Image 1: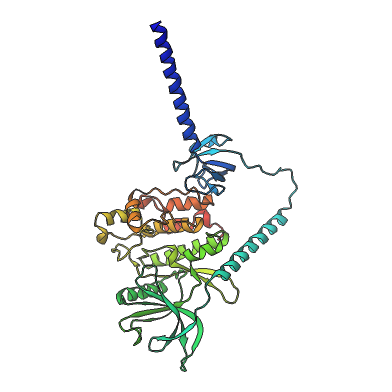
Image 2 (image 1 turned 60 degrees about the horizontal axis):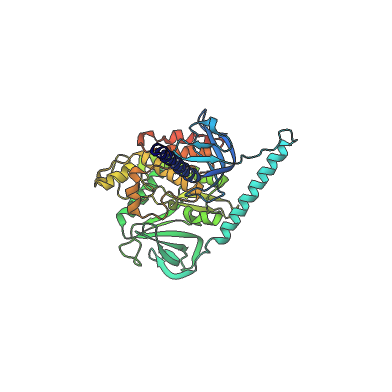
Length: 422
């Protein structure tokens, strides 16, 4: 009897263990994001396979958002109801695959191509119209002047992103004291050394073989005039918005031609700076502005704010946590930031962060304090699964290589498949 009781107890324990294990497995399985309407696509590297589909149950991505995964560890597992693992460490359950139209269907290729291009242009015009409608109007002219009456100010001065200068709209003044010409932007600061450095950096780039796509400068006043003694002023072309402020007006992120144009503009600006041996040290969405052509209504992007640019191998005078690479954050945390030697790959990391933000509408560290960003960066592992374009996701992941020497040169970036045909 005792022996039977013991056997029964043993079986009960084994049964309960099996139940517990099954429950744990079910719980773990239910936490895995699911991809529906998915399709396997070729990656940018030979042999890579990625999955494009609509995700649900993801901890950070909204249900129904379309994503492209990183390359699969085992492409043979890309089947319905299978769980796949990616090279970035993510796991996804593959739900209902995308149903493609029958290959037997008769399609006029030229007609389809023309229709696609027409829809793309209509979408682009809708985006631009919405952006113009929501953009701020030109502020009213005031009775204040700058540069001993040379410029008439308009609206109110607002602090720059870093808080070290003021930005205000202005017009050139006629001899009669009336406003004339196009509205301009004046950057005003009491940090005359930094203002002079920014102006010199613009001049240095202008003298290089590659000019980049920077905002047009009108004039630099080391002495802003009797109206603002001890201040310097940089007068420039006026943009509609910076890119960070512009994105919510066009659907929350940049897409299609706008995304490509913005990515190319930032690349050209980096090429120009590196061509004269400068490291930008502050490449971010706030440092690109949207400029509208008054004749055609087309918009383009321009780089601004070269105040922090320093020669390669020199030490930084400033930094933005969201744009700085892990190796600099580590130096900052150990008290060695002032002796940190700037390299071109610093900007390449910033470019990867920039591309991620403009393509998804979200920065990796949105809502996180500067102090926390700096602490997180040394061990930060970027995931690019929610970048819609797998080719762009590949470029971003390369730029965000944790090891600085593994980041691509600008020459390699310009030859990346994402820029094919530009």
